[in-house]
Picture 1 (cartoon, rainbow, N blue to C red):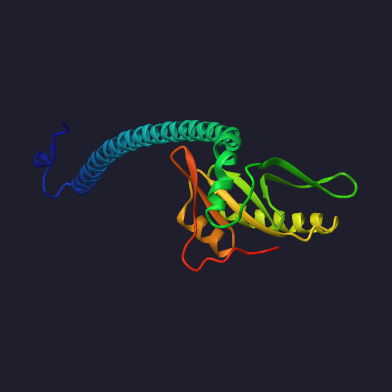
Picture 2: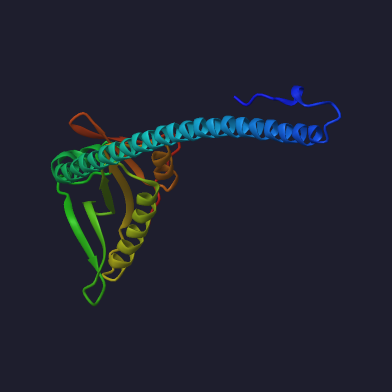
Amino acid sequence: MIESTTNNIPAQDPLRAVIEEVWATLREVAESQKQDRLQMQEERLQMQETRLQMQETDRKIKEVSEAQKQTTRQMKETNRRFGLLSNRFGELAEHLVAPNIHKRFNELGYHFGCRSLGGMILSDNKGNTRAEIDLLLENGSTIMALEVKTKPTVKDVEHHIKRLEILRENRSTINDKRVIKGAIAGAIFGTEEKKATIEAGLYVVEQSGDTMKIDVPEGFQAREW
């Protein structure tokens, strides 16, 4: 500690003012250094807090990244299972839908025989495939074309309408004037998809246990091609 000796200097000493000025300057420097040290300590604390925040942020980012990876894995597994379900339903279409679907339509007055055709390919005059029909029911006046899906979508409805138009063109080229109608069969039918199917004039064929049922709402009129 620096001790002042100005009390031993005579009051009239011309050096007194200079010494007092020097001591004032030293006090200011000491105070400034003290403030600098406090500021540096505060800055160090802020830096430590910032590092802690960055570490916490990194931890949260890693958690989010891991959660995203887990979600991706779950989505892949869900898609894999849905793909297996789709393939399985496709394999079962012939055994679940085809054997008895003619009976369900006959209950509506169609009189189809028990024979149904699957995998019918519609080609142009150059042999290029234009459309494929999953199941086809026929009698002397009507052809019923069915599209089989695990979970039908609105797009499936639009695609089937196009398929029926192609079938109409195909039959017209051989002078087959029978009425063509359409239906979509699905294991899982959403409300919107069912509404779109019915509004398009197509029959809704739903899975019911180990068989299929046809949902015909009041006032429904099947569209003809």
